[in-house]
Length: 171
Image (cartoon, rainbow, N blue to C red; front, side, top):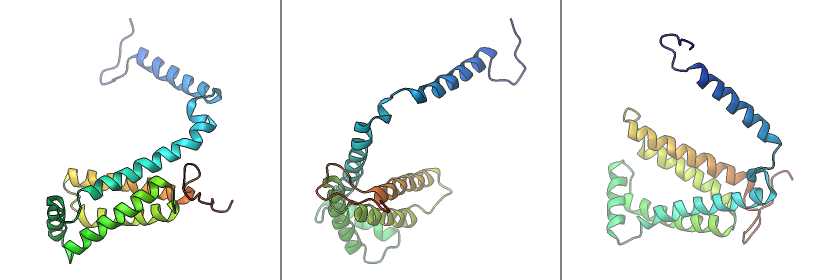
């Protein structure tokens, strides 16, 4: 039996498993995995677009004017120092509904995604500034992930299952 050095967290068997896993991953690049198929390449962006649109519609559901959620959102927005918080929340509601639906149905997707990316960046900078709090920092990083996905959508737009198919840039 082989001895393991003190402080080492991997046994020789674990190292072998890691190398075998890397070898298997490298060998699968020649296989026809589902994520390399044309159907996947056509429909995964549609699913992503619909999920992003759904996220913004869900956010808008908390901002429906005249509801308790609207009052709460207005209060949190005012507490963050946004002037005319009630109007800002109402405008956010309209923006999230119109552009969320636009992403879902595939209408002017490139423009909608770009505007939502800027909107999401503004939200992150306004509401998640206390980086000393790990929860706030996590929310900020989460918003950066949303921005990354929206920017990607803003480049490629809607190619399938869209009311108006976007032309690709420089194609």
